[in-house]
Image (cartoon, rainbow, N blue to C red; front, side):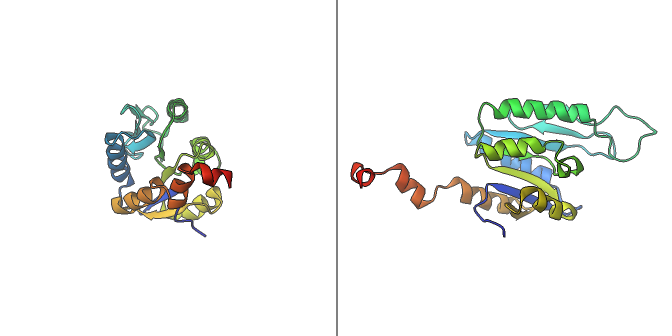
Length: 186
């Protein structure tokens, strides 16, 4: 039930894989080609309170972890900081984009919170979206996406191939854009 032409892609990773490096490199390459990539990619880790993200439209690095608390356990994501990052992405998205990258499909997104609204906003504006999804959360992602997502291996060439398919107009679309007067009057 996956659509190879879907504008919604999940870069599915295992615990030993690094989707962030792949997404950052991909975004940098597209931006260097003059495309506008909006979103964020994770930098740092939950475990050591260095959790942060890089905004792709301007390169700003934002701390997402709570201020260090020795008594805290698990991921120390600061929800106010995440919300602030989302607002900055939404503002950038309002100025147009060729692609939106969301750093993770996490438990907040699974519950329709976190950055889920940005995925919906981009989807409604016909802007392609790619998101990193842990393999053990892929079933939740499919439910969230209504089955309308491409599953990509956590490899740069898989991401490049997906982008090539969706960024290249089909021959029918090109013909429709360049209709002759006779074709329009038929």
